[in-house]
Length: 557
Image 1 (cartoon, helix red, strand yellow):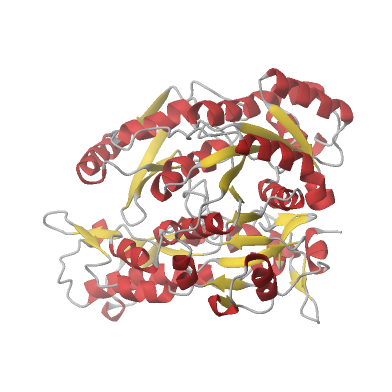
Image 2 (cartoon, rainbow, N blue to C red; image 1 turned 180 degrees about the horizontal axis):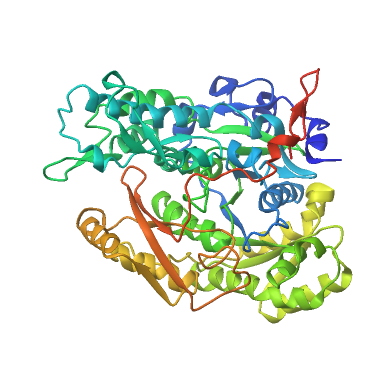
């Protein structure tokens, strides 16, 4: 059966009953969205602040390929397996974006028998969080243009407006637009652009805020433009927009709780991309889960060079989180692809391609252990066409590298297929008393932080930027110098070239643009031609999605 067919046949339990029975939380603290989705009240979250925290496990992956790796599927399968072996576990995931859902990637609720449900709801509108984030973002954009239209008392320079509009859809036609055409009643014409909602600073703020008060304060710090004369920053607070923005996000900031196919709890909340944003679910949901469970499994988007680095250097730094282990997801198919294999032939045994692709996995393992300071367990996510010879070869090679590889079959068998992985991970977590490491220090210069990530994690030999970019970073050093950096780079390669597979080294990373996210609390550095508004492929997934006469969603994967 397809993922959606499996999900639609799931034996789901009413979420209110499931939470009440498993965690003892009163129904008064739950805000249901139908039978199988609920939000957890902020009042309850505040009431458990003194609880002892559980143990945090990060799930990351090798560099993504068209063959797929299954990071979310592994997160769900591992969580179910940990519960099977008696570890009270909650999985914390990101909410899917409609852009990739209708584009090339498809949904993001896991797969096979390791999914979170209701799958269709989670992948489509869910509880409306993304709509609220987009509305809050675009309200600020509208208030900015409205201020200029009605006299521009703040002396904003329209040429120095930094704030784009957003929409939660892949739409290349919106990358560059002209606004306010049609006469004076429509405002002052200017060039503009759209980003996808998951790249919005409001999304980043939403995922890093620790309370409603913190959310509003961060929203007020968003820099939207600069003045004509002194180039002074204009913020959302100057436009008196943060209150209304927070009002739109009041309900959204409460974490969403759903369940896995095996009726274990899952927090699914927030969803910035890891290639163009910081790639982690909300801090508030992760910290809440840690107060409620013995183990918390969370994922960071794309490969360990992107999602895991940002998880460590941004989310853990800001949220005072201490992960105890990393699970590195790999597949035989993906390794053969990185070894030069044709995507059409990855189901055929090819030990030469497998061996040639191993440096990609080795690089990620090295980064996790040496630069992030975490013990690493390699999960070989099993596919039906993997041969025993390939699996044995892979396990032997990973062991020779000093790693531990566990074959997991959670896609086919659910939590039962990941019990060996769960046992290995729990052994590592329970035996680790060490503190993780950051890639750079907070007091390093912004340029040095970018260089540290590029050289240590991407194995680049140099970082290139225009004089304008360098001057901007130097100017920000005085006020924003302690902020972490968030590098927007292709997820497909350690380099900025998505076609460069394996484990390239000695390449250049070119920083083409830098953006200040003062509210979120980091500096975005765009590498190469990375775009913050994706486009749809020639044959988008949307062409296969439908709804039958009974209202049942079809074709979603």
